[in-house]
Amino acid sequence: QVQLLESGGGSVQAGGSLTLSCAASGYTYNTYCMGWFRQISGKEREGVALIYTGGGRIRYTDSVKGRFTITYDNVKKTTNLQMNNLNPNDTAMYYCAAEKVRLAVGTCEWHQAEYDYWGQGTQVTVSS
Image (cartoon, rainbow, N blue to C red; front, top):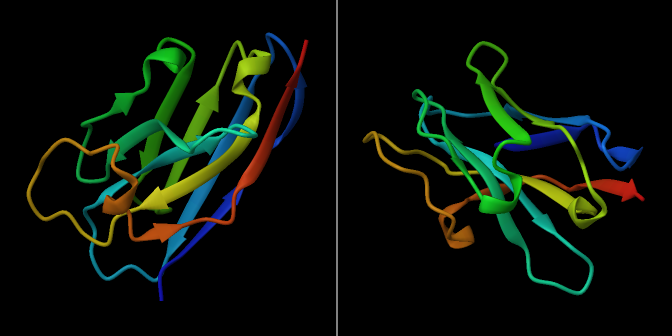
């Protein structure tokens, strides 16, 4: 049974930083796409950042490029999202998501149906 355990959300003032972490457990496979999605109140959930655990292949949504950095620790099976220069538009519930497996190296997709496992979500609130 795969589980994704998120941590690191909270409240911060505009211009501040937060780091979200997502620890995966119970995996049979070692290579898959993993990443972060967010849902702003009243809006659909959207992709934020994705990473292929087999090496690189990182994607960011345009609104976070240059401010957010996603990394993956293969030993800890943990993905981290370093968020800098936060602004109120980043206020949302952030969800970690992961595929079951991706055996062939490729670009991770934003389609949420591709992701088999989801975390419970962690709230990020940015005040002006």
